[in-house]
Image (cartoon, rainbow, N blue to C red; front, side, top):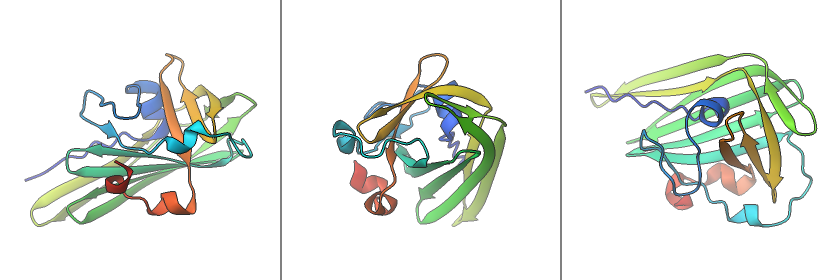
Length: 170
């Protein structure tokens, strides 16, 4: 049995071409955002887009943690997919730039990792598309808005968020 995990959790795919991702809302493919946004209600400390940002999502038995490392000249995106003891990581590194209110991704990239265990095929993918988007802060969290007005809220990576599983975040 081949299970295809279409994890379009890559920053620009979700933010620009998929659907709005908000807490406890599902997209048409059944992906549920399970990120704990409680910290986003506080005041922001050191508001800089240059940081490592995360979002946690779930689709049936699959858990995803997507990480965005935003720097002055590059964007590094990692999608970690877990199911039934199988963990896969798909990553891309693309050129990017930003100013006071916009993030521009200069190139598109895609990476797909596959594995089979116990007769179960699992695929994990990250897909980033070249585009520009606005950004703002909600407390210490990052809000990305695409040209269609769709938004994605990301939490800053902390020592504790690195180890939070989607089970704990629910």
